[in-house]
Image (cartoon, rainbow, N blue to C red; front, side):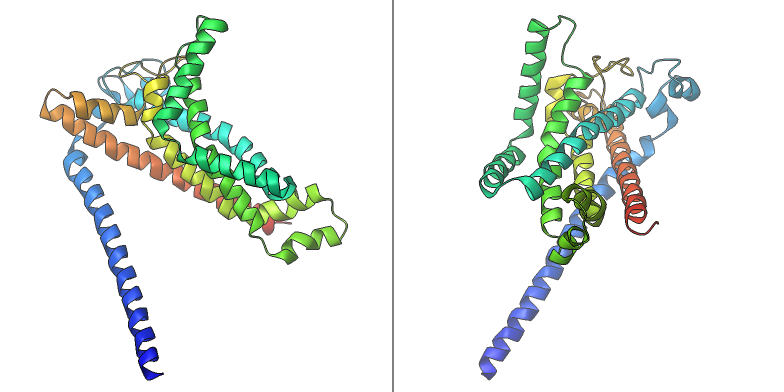
Length: 299
């Protein structure tokens, strides 16, 4: 009995120590990567890197194009994320609610396997699919349709859709039984119970999937390479225009740079991309807090 107790104590110490070591290694790795980026690229960040020789006010008001700075790529990245998430959130929420509350066991199993496979598809395959859609539309619908911002946004939305679906489904299914049946016992319909009780209670978990989708849309390169991004296009004039994006700029500079300064600008672009992701995460977090308060605590 004493030997068993000692063994359990040893295993507890071992698991706790291993967890601490893994956490320290992970935190150290992330700190080294971010620290190296800031060491190499912080000195290159300036208004000139973003706006080039263009007046910042004219660039921000879209009165003058920027062709020698990162502003078009920053604008394109924001546009791409907003377009992708705007497509993925409604479809993902609706699908997750259906799987959690309306689908039968067999349907849930079939669609569950399908969405799990979709989540594991490489992004380059999604990009190839988007490119094929653009070619099909160009041939059969309009010769003015090419790989563009709209095709990229829809392709990225399709890429992150499984995360939002699964997050919504799991968050609804994990609610305690008393939360699920109380409103029904008081006379609410199933739709009212989902809308006014279950979704507000699941909102923090659902928005965590949205935050994950935002990060994936902002950093993915393989999809946009095949669906409309180019090295120099300026600010996109419409949804069917070519565009620039920071992930592609970083890839292009790191593989095609001609001097050290140009490579350092790629590090600067990486820092700006990290800042954009942090900004989008902060906005999503604030929206999460605001919606949770409005749904649960405000009369």
